[in-house]
Image (tube, rainbow, N blue to C red; front, side):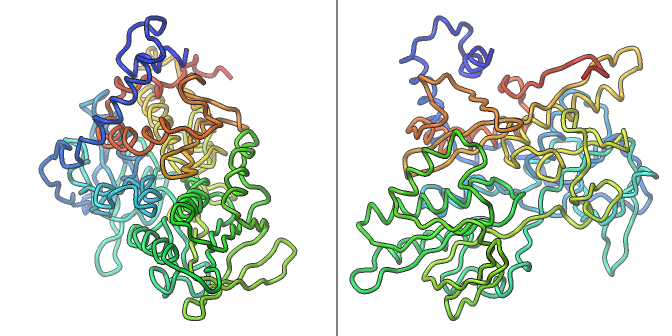
Length: 478
C-alpha cells in the first residue's frame, strides 16, 4: 500500500511498471527541481491586517498557532469547507522552517530560505489575529487575547484547534541567555545562533597544534522537538572536522539513558559516534553555563554536579508547553493538551482538537508528525460540523513521526517510526533503507523536503501528498 502511495506521489500510476532506475531518477529529479525553486516563488497574498476582537466575534473554527500544524490545518479547512469563518491566532509576523536550521549550522543551507512573512502564508479568507493567546476558557468556548497596556480581549468559537507548539525554556539553564550566541555557546534551535554554530565549527577546524579544542553537544530531558537534532549538530560538526583533518575532543552529554529511542537505529548511530571519537555521557543534564570562563555544569542521574570546560558548547534547552496551555483546563498532568491519541480530540471538551508539538500523545514531536496530524484534525472537525446523518466516520492518527538524521554532510539516516518505535518507512528498502545512511535520503532532506513544506504542506495541497491521507474508521470503533 505504501509503495503504491510513493508511486502516486512521484507521478506514476502503476508501481509495477516503474523500474528501480526510473524510481531513483524520479526522486532525484524532484530533489533537483526543488533545489532550483526559490522560496520567493511562493504565491504571496496581500498583507493581512490584525482583526479587532473588542466585540468578541464568534468563529466557526479558531486555530491557535501559526506553525506547521496550525497553518496546514487552516489551509485544509479552507479547501474543504470554504464557507467557514476561520480565525488564526498567531502573534509572530515571521514563520520559520525549523528543520533546516541544523543544515544552516552545517553550512549546508541558506538561513534566509528558512523564513517567510506570515502574511504570505495565511490562506485567503482566513482572518489572522496577530495577538497572543493568554487563556483558554473552554467551558465558555472562549479565548482571552493579550491587548496593549496589560489588557485582554475575548474571542469566541464553535470549534477550537490548539497548535501553539513548544516553549523553549532557555532560562531553565543558569547563565545561558546572556552568553548564547557568543563565548563559544551556540544552539541550532535558535535562528539567530545557528549561523554562529557554523562559525565555531570553522574556528575549531583551523586549530593546529597544542591542546585539542573541546566541543560539547547537549540534549535535555524529553520531550523536545525533533529529538534527533542534538545528534545532527554533532555529526555535521564532527564530519567537518574530520574532513579538515582537525583533532577535536568531542563529547555528547544527554539527559537520557540511551543514544536513540528506537533500537533499530542505534547500531548505525553508534557507528558514527565511534567513527568521530565522541565520548558519550548519559544521565547528564546541563544546568548552568559560564560563558566567559568557558565552563558548563551538568547534574548527573545520581545527583552529582560535574563541570566540563569547552571551546564550543552546543546547547539544546529544555522544552515545555506554552503557559497558556500548561496552566489551562486543557492540559494534562504533564502540561500538554490532553487528547485522545488517535483522534486528537480533547478528552473532556469534544469541540476542542490539538495538533503539533503541544499534544499529549507519545509520538515524536516533528514536522512529519504535524503533517500526518493535520488531516486527522480537519476530517474529525468537519465530521462534527456535518449533519448528524452524514458523519459516520472518524480519522485516525497512526503515531507517525520522522527524523532525518544527518550523520555526515551528504548522507542521512531517514528514521521513520510510529507508536512504540514501530518502523514505518515511506520508501521501499531498495530505494532508501531507513536504518542505513543514504545519499538519496540527503537529497530528499536537503532539497525535496523544504520545497514540499513551502509549496505542498503549508498550502494544504493534500492531493499531492497521498501518504498523509489518514486511515478512517466508523465513528466509535476502536
